[in-house]
Image (tube, rainbow, N blue to C red; front, top):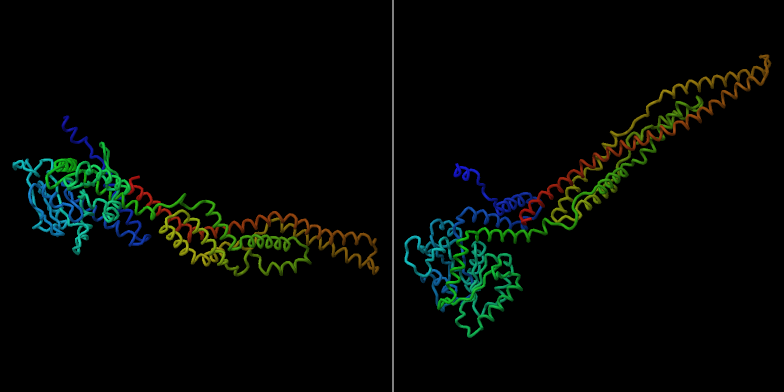
Length: 535
């Protein structure tokens, strides 16, 4: 029961590198239409290398001996292998093609094919586990080691440097073989050590040919080498700390070779060098990609920017003028319904000229004002974004802004308030006005009749009737105008809100939503980049 529980209850430990590799793939997929292909080419190549290496045997560790002409790489390679496998001599360059030696080679063929090692340049050593005699190079701790002897990185032969550069991108661990004369070579430090400072955990630096140095000169050279590495930013692991390993050896007489072999044996036994190398490659890529995905300061479209954009669009379609026109239309309609009958002829003609807020066709939205609103919004939304994503945000705003003026005109036409509704009290006032007019007419007729003697009555009664009818109508019309101010203002505000809402809807649909989509995509890639960067 206990064994069954252990079998089913155990969980595989999470693989941080796998998560980073997956995130890098997602990152590149989300970025292909936003970031230049040239800027993503190196990262795409790394993603392919990551996939290739992780599909092949992680029980093997590929270690490359790299160095300059005359550094003794091949001699050291042979000393580690325990056989004369790589040609040595005074002729330069001696190593024309990479040579490999595999300990416990089962499963290493795929790695060697990936490295492009020719079949005739592949050698194999058995470990003591296979019953081989104990000879130099058959240490059982080296089982799983694939050791390469690379051409000289400063070779004058055409193509040697290209081979070295290609293989250095593919191997798990690099052992730089330095000699007392060229260890400070600027080309070595500037071309290789400084750019690969982040790969210190999978880097060894071996000062070879120390047998040529008298007294304590070897210690002095090692101290100077450590100083140069510190200037390169390459951390040196000392006293158990993580970092590059620095050793002094003599491949010729064997001094220090057992220490190097033991160090390689420890690296191979850990079975983690491949993942550490790949993780360092991802770190380096993340540093290189940082300007493409990490901006400065806060990123996003702020609420004040949105409100300002809507206000600008409202101004472009003339919401203030629409409100004022709607108020005037309400006032004219009130005057037409509540004014004196003899004043209605003029009022009706004015009202008939147009009572809507924008007139029959309506004025077009101001294109310069709309363009400026879109530009200002794009600049605010792009604030703090890395260059490719700021460009994508501006392009989205520009594309949406191209058809925005026409969309605003259409929306504004649909938002017109039309002729104001007639309140019930307007009709009552209209009836009273006609009664007052009738009273005034009756008074005038009676006054004329009294004047010509056809009516025997006092003259002041017709005068009172005329005054009450005429002045009462004017007073009632004035009172109605005062009473109509509040409803007219509310009618204008309603027209303004409807027009502003229509402009806001079109602005959101045409510009704000595409810009928000770009910002959302950036947030997605920013999250993926954080995983790639190990955050």
